[in-house]
Image (cartoon, rainbow, N blue to C red; front, side, top):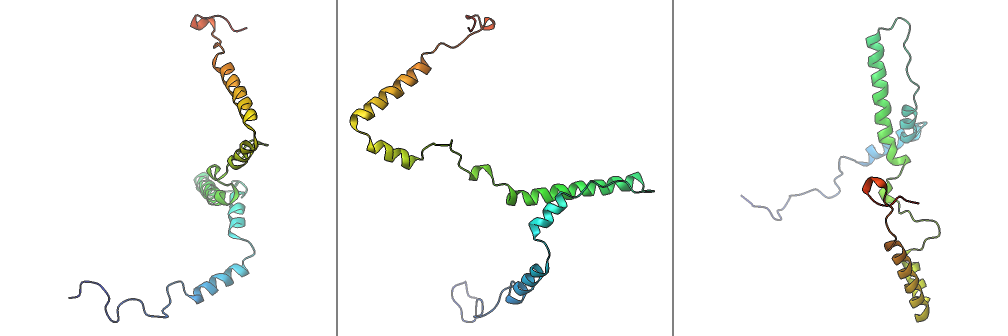
Length: 148
């Protein structure tokens, strides 16, 4: 018995379609063309469905089942629609207005003269020292002086 490798007549036949053939694709396109709303619109409509009210003569248990189904459908529709309406936070890089990218900062640094770089370095050191050397405000609870 053969143990793998190339064998005559084995494998997929040339020109053979797959399960998702052209007629299936055409059928889906036809259904979508006839639809009066997109899938996202349908999900949003489900999510925004009004809260059910109890009908006259309806048993409380039947109403509660209907209400629970409504709530579950809303929740599932919201979960399904959320990725299309709200991007994930990890996909967005936030920068404060007016901030520079690394490339811009590098380009700005390269344009400075040596004297300007040294002056900037001294300013940064002074700023860091002013934050580091500030005494921590202590209160009476910790046995230190009261903050002013």
